[in-house]
Length: 281
Image (cartoon, helix red, strand yellow):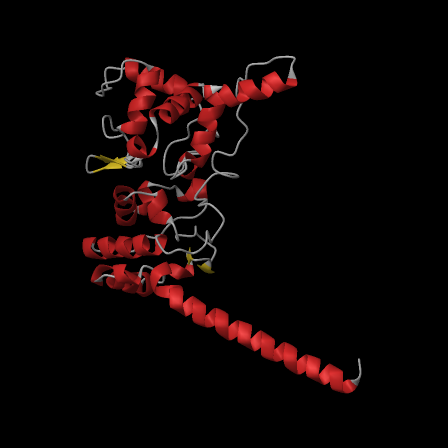
């Protein structure tokens, strides 16, 4: 390639890159309104954005991966934590984490009830922006490793035939329930760990089977369940039927457990999830 050909190649490549860049920019702006749900930007959302900036939340948290990485990313926080939990947390974060144990503590911003409501509206709008799955990392508030990521001893039926083992694993309700635990939305692991002693937004589920059996048998229990399976079922589809004592788990008579699993999970999936949780003894 001579100098003239090199010059023409460089000019052509530059022009092509500019055309592609301009085209993608125009296309992005064409989709911004739809991707960001611009029609859902209410007065509360705007006020909540002001609360976010006025309190320098970005100095610790990130949205869309932008900000400081001292505290969890909050892009999808309202999809992982319900309004009742977020309100209680913002009113008094010290009820949820111990500075000595967790080595850091969310400062109490002394937000008014209106500020809290508006900030949640802003975060909820953010959570519904189509960001292509970004950021990819889950919320890690406390504990070690991935939430619920510890190995679990799932008792899969055994057979000498390799094909038979695979088929049995696919039909094993405990293994299927573990998949539901990991894949349902919001994922159970976003709030619950299966590591002993690692309490997140919800309590650790290590030993949940043994604890539940004692709870149902206790005179303090006021729900409708009569045994372990029915208690776990009740906790999933009707979390307000019995409120586990503790400021971390409910507020104003409302459980922090997401109430939508009864509609989002099929009866079969709930039964599989119950089978899996019953195996955590």
